[in-house]
Amino acid sequence: MFSYMRTTLDVPESLLNEAQRLLQFKSKTDTVIFSLRELIRKKRIEELKELAGLIRLDVDLDRSRRRPRRRTR
Image: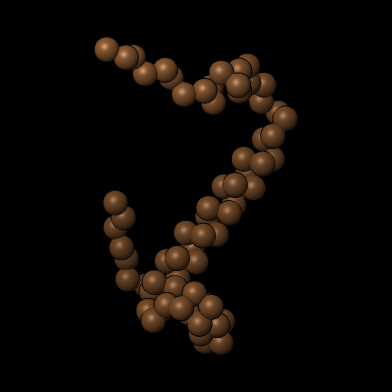
């Protein structure tokens, strides 16, 4: 899934400690990984929201939300 690399970062200790406390993580590594993933997720959502109204989709929402009928034997 992911390959990991060992790296050295200069991160303000108070910032990392606060993030760790808020997220209730014991590991600094877990705190950084979670925070980066969350940042990426939020940015991708922002990018998708910016596309709202720019792409025309011809979708029948009512039909797409209906569950297919099960066949009875």
